[in-house]
Image (cartoon, rainbow, N blue to C red; front, side):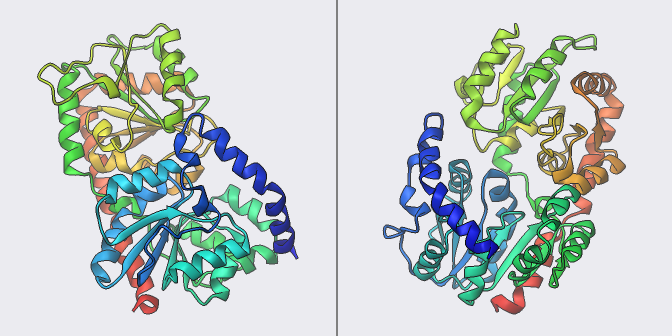
Length: 424
């Protein structure tokens, strides 16, 4: 009954959802491209399989899936891989990672109505589906199970906050998650919360993000960018979210140290690049943009107070060029973004109080000496100033970050092991 009500609501809001795509395309044109795919129309896409299907909703999930996708392609050479998304930035990230690979096909997942999901499954006939992290759509899960397609929730996480919300649905929540062949959880805490919901098939496999390898090209570009800074120290504010930049800019204007570093400001969403650039300029800072910087030129130089990271697919470069990085979404109650990529490159991190999306990883990084917790933007600047002023402490935190990232690798192997009985 709940699923029927949910489907009827989808019917009512479908025109609004389509209009929202048009509205969002004002800042991000990709939202009005390939709309037919969101309605289950894939006639322009080759359907020859056999297919393994991985769903990665947006940028973070697409990057996290990379080690798993690489391993699946190696382990199952007779299969092709269908990579689905919900956002243009996720699709663009997938294209940057896999563009030109003839065994990988990208498209959007259809909206969550039963007949659209059935059309998607009938067209591609995937042998198995892997849903990354938290993207649980009731009709998608139910229809896929009814179609006999094994479906796994991979790299799954369920914060205490999300658990409390989900538990309100009682047996309906348990029924939804039990339609998965298996839930492969990041941590023992995540697994415990899934079991408390009544989920039967749960296994702890670890966090795939620890298996992400820093691309050599990105590291080399990071050194080139570093040279353009002319020896200045660099504080990165990475994957910042709406509402955070004013706090960061105001606190940065009151930098507590003797010499203010360069601020490398990287908003999470590309449609906000112009907005954040204007915000920084109005705050009295000189601003340069990565998009206007030719790192291949002989005289690349960043002399401004702030370099705006207005590019996609270059986070490895930004982290490699930074001395220390604040990870966005954690000064305000949004749950924080991924700190693992920075640690894997050896960049110490600062996190706010709101890290429920990466709770275990954050606590482990703090315990390892790779991360410092700050309560607000002023404390963020004080902590950054103290670490940057102490060369030995900075070097120690760098080493701790690399050690922390290395100790937690292995989720890809464990995930493949859990999938093997079904995918054989």
